[in-house]
Image (cartoon, rainbow, N blue to C red; front, side, top):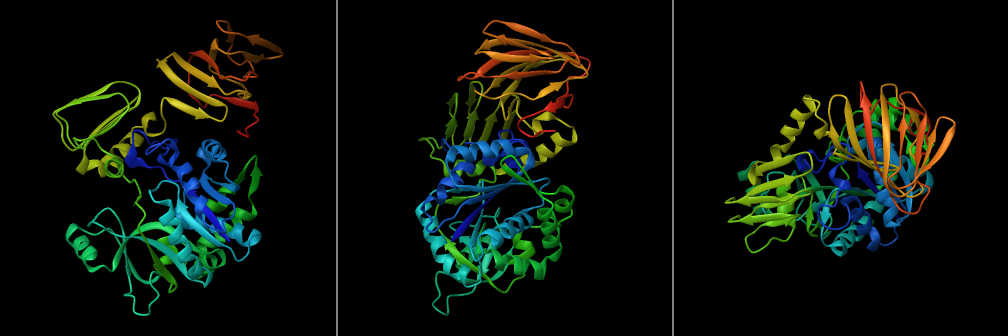
Length: 471
């Protein structure tokens, strides 16, 4: 049996401003109608002898991940919450420990949630080839057939096929991202593949190698799992134990050290979408080489990627540029410099700018809210509550709130009273009053919230009851 393990803990800083720390690229619909996480799940459908899916994600993304997985109707075994990102080796270790208990002898397919693979059938065929090697105890990685001297990828060198085992090759070495001249030499030799970051091995085999080469990771993960707790649909790892684990990738912790590493070539339209230029590579352009998303108008523009989300974006006389617009930020960059977007994100973080973390439209387990306007002593939000959902029973120390219903029907708890608000009706929530907002209807509830007070931060919330397990 093959047990898929989807790693969904990345932040995708190079795809800012669409990708944010609290809404990373794997949760976005970048190349089609589905999100990248959902496409990863759907890609598994043609894999034979497939078991249920494990997903490892950041704790702050848990409700978004759960909702997107629910929409796929996939058989989800566990959604494992990382209290802090520790790279891929600990994440895979947690999944392997769970799999050995419930599915002893199973092979685990470890794959990132944020890759594009255009040919799912070719991917499934490669997995089938690697399965026999993995069942024999080898640790299989999938090497992307290199069609150009890319300098943004790591490479894997394999041994020539002298024993007729093709297409499973022994791995000789892992190579860091090379310069242009070295990359050209790698591609010309035919002995090097791009490192995909996708792995296939028995759970027991991975744990055995991890104990040999990175025992501190395994000790920390065992303790984190022993002290874990179920929380709604999630498995919450012990924070202190998991954060004590060294932060390391599967490559560094195990694959570069083991003598059992093997590679299966993968030629399936793969792209890790590591930067905006990658989307220009994988999507279909018009006759001028442009890719346009949203409300976009151009004149004398060639080979550009232009993405508008909330307003009209126009461009004149450009070539080889990336333009991405959101409601609170605009990125303009040459295609050759898009790897440096992460530098901007780091600067935003240093300045403690919200644009590094989240969008104006923020997802919550009950729905969404969007900040429409704000000043020192007031803030205006548009709130949407999903049918059957409810905010927590809460109070605020520093702000009062005024709610105006614009669509749907709201049930409002205010201290010891319950009132019903229909469209065009409103209510006032004084400072310090316990209150709750519910949508008991079958259509989304929309309202405008006006906050006023001396402090309007999102951390001014005292929750006394919450159906989603938030503190």
